[in-house]
Length: 208
Figure 1 (cartoon, one colour):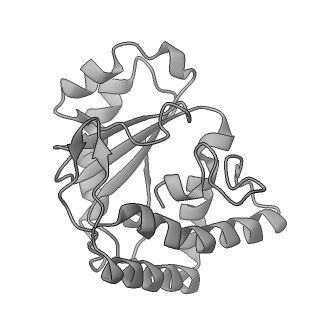
Figure 2: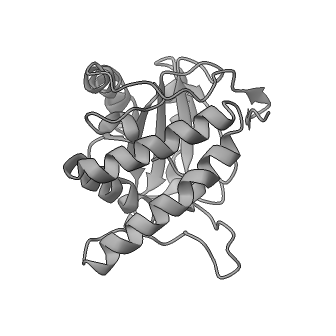
Figure 3: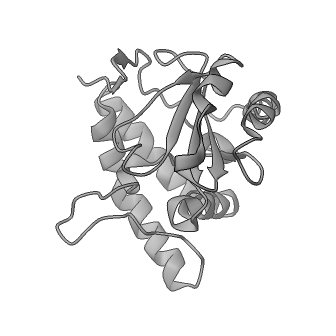
């Protein structure tokens, strides 16, 4: 059983896949309306709803994943204080610094309802997350298959998050390869290197 540490603090919530909740878009909007003004000095573009809760009809962990973009990771002084000021906790994850990324959770790390991922603007860092989301929204067969896979992985071990993410990775990688071959922009840099291990910002480290 493995709970991931976040700056010395640990998650307490199990990996539980529940049926789609029609209230998830409103839950995203409520926090987006707070997060966007707090991050406005740094971010470009809108804060996006990503991950499985952004896909109508798909079962998911009841955690709203959000995506924001900054021009330069080095020029984000004060971002932790700004997010703390609206009640969000800094939740650094393995690989964040290497991937030049920030992670924050609401209302706390142990039992979160929302998670925002802040990437640099280079599409290689984040485009695949939106491509995957948009495909799933319009391809219910793929969404159903992915939902079944997640439910099986969660049932096998509700606390081993590295195992859960690694178990999803082949499905995600295969789908992105299929979309790339069909001409869809995926921004798949940072996937798996020739040794088969995940590089910075790779598939198993992202939120799908």
